[in-house]
Image (cartoon, rainbow, N blue to C red; front, side, top):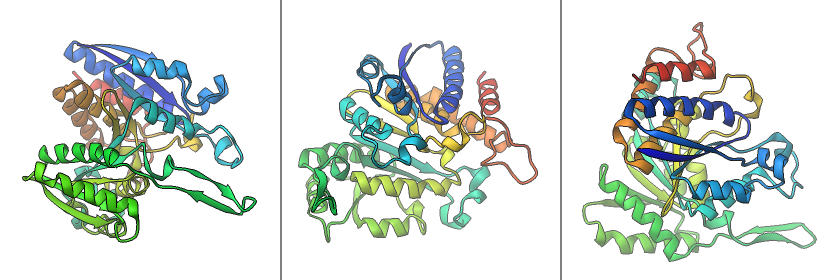
Length: 354
């Protein structure tokens, strides 16, 4: 099978972790007789420095001509520390999501048996956790009308949603719930926000189409509390952009490290796969970043974009093996044990794909 994959390394540790994912993907391709065509492209701060735009037209053309996108990270301290910057790396990510029609962010949260005691939460709270967030990506407050008034002393950001935007995300949530434990939770703030009331009304109207799915409706503040108390009570959760941004980062600590959690951003056609961590500029170039989230994102890519379940399962198996054998970077190493370099972890994973 021929696989055309756009490769957007991005900023910070992005290139380093992407390199390891490419190693693993190439090993998978060799084992299963696939032909991967990698199409590198610029995005983020690297693209701003090169061409003045965080998501150039050339990058977009490469993405839309590919079967999937594997993405590293976006962000640079030069822009983080300059609130007046007119062009920012993160604008490239938002533009990419809009132009590629990536309206749903799929974020799994699960635990690894060998790392369960590294979580800040008690073992009995998190054991068996396997939940999935669907976060709406192209609407809400991040894309609504915004501005300043009163000579800059008052600022506003507007959260706007249409029923169509909610329906398409909810449909993906219901469909995913049918493949899992058939439980769906709609996360909103319907006691206060009109946009949340539309979310709730829309999902309620869809319930009859999925009679096997048990649907719950919970306020976002209650979910934020329950995620750290009883995370394994959830299966599939759907929510709007801002709430999803916050809750998925909260959920990521359940596993013990943000460096372990993959994600997918999907729409009608192409899918984009990326680790949930940021660009971590303090570690850039030091060969110490954890590549496992990026490698697991590649596993999601094989499964979701190409329907290659065996390939995705093998990647997850070798990641589990690396954790069990202690072949991990410094963020996961036990006291007194050896910390492996980013590239060494990638080499180990590749060596196990035989």
